[in-house]
Length: 93
Image (cartoon, rainbow, N blue to C red; front, top):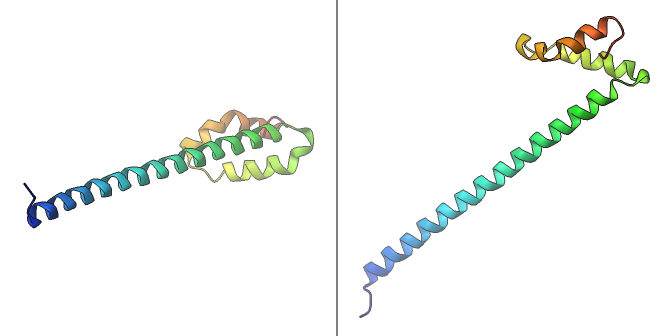
C-alpha cells in the first residue's frame, strides 16, 4: 500500500530533523577539536617561553614575561610566585 502525501511529508520532515541534529553534532565536534588544538598551542607556547626564559641571554624576555605576569589577577599570579620571587635576585624570572 502506497503512503499518502501527508505521510511522505511527515517522513521527509523527520529525515530533515535527523539530518539537522547530525549537522549540529558534527559542528559541535569541530568546535571541540578547535578548542583542544587552541589549548594545546597555548600549553606548548607557554612551555617554550618558560624554557627560554631560563637561558642567560633571555633577560629582555624575562623582563617582558615578568611585566605581563604582574598584570594577572592575584590568584593567577600566585601560580608564578616562585618564579616572580626569583626575578628579584636573578633567578628564573
